[in-house]
Length: 252
Image (cartoon, rainbow, N blue to C red; front, top):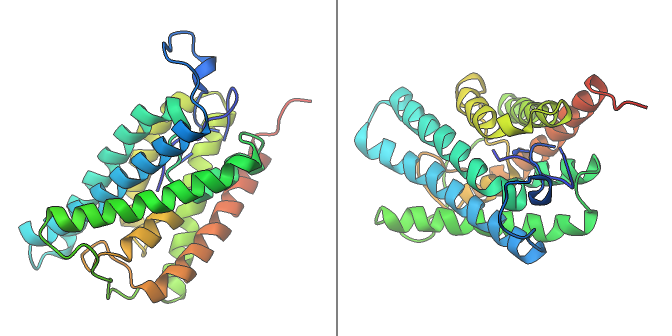
């Protein structure tokens, strides 16, 4: 999951080439943020995203006990809406990636300097862990309760690859065709839909995958399942990026 990727003009994100850089917008009244502020925005957005995902999952479990379908619907709706809002408010600052795959794709397609990848990814992972802990505490659970939900198996890994490829495809196609402003609603809608058409419920984000291991709740994932999920996401992200670039070649 993630937001919109910004660049020095127009770039590849999640999350979502997705966003415009602050300096490219005539009506922006703040100065272009440095890497420290951008990384902080990524950490904040990632933390809030994790809190939305995990918190809504816990609430769904409590409000709709015994009804897994309704729980998934509640979790998906909250995530889709929350993600769209976070992208809309933070994209002008950092690009609202909230997702290491989106950041890597942004750098690989020339939208971001490679030296910025490490601080972005570190901020995203730290933010998602912090947001999960916050969600646990808000619902009276232990700050850290390792998830026991095993999400292993080839079908789930295939689903994660598909979910991440689709996310990157949405982001890059919008950005590379001059429609980056649609990233917030489009990415939110895609993730909400992908909760339902993928067997894995579309994590599509290594940072949120790591964070969700810290909560033994509806949205959790067992620590042993994290590495395979992340590997599938990286493969899917690369496939989605390659397809998007092939579909939208730059003018000579």
